Amino acid sequence: MQLTEIDHVAIAVADLEAAITYYEETFGCSVDHREVIEKDGVEEALLKVADSYVQLLTPIRDDSPVAKYLATKGEGIHHIGYRVSDCSEALERVKAAGHRVIDEVPRPGSRGTTVAFVHPKGAFGTLIELVQE
Ligand code: CO
Image (cartoon, rainbow, N blue to C red):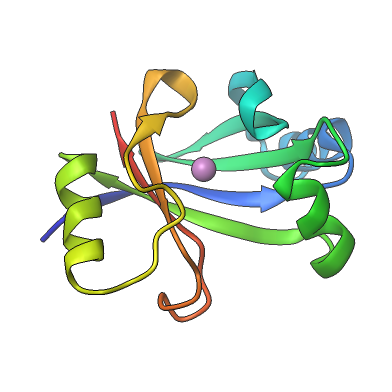
């Protein structure tokens, strides 16, 4: 078994502050971590739920993939992040099985993690992120 836990469920939102307030006031959640990921053109807020996170994501640039997602699909679940003990090994298994990937090699994610994205085409319509802590 390659996937050890659900790391996060990522939700694309147009207004990060409004989404944070919603989770705080409605469910009593609190923000555990915030980060701007320049390379991906996003700002994220992580709210802890048990050992996993809800990751609220908003674009900081018009050319961000999340901006394109919001423009075409609107707000909602964007991807699922699964924890793996070895991102490189898990990614190689996906490729060896003949499935499409977005990242050919693992790269730095937020919180100092190492991540790689698997293409939703070939993964039954879900964008999958492999997360190694
Ligand atoms: Co993610």
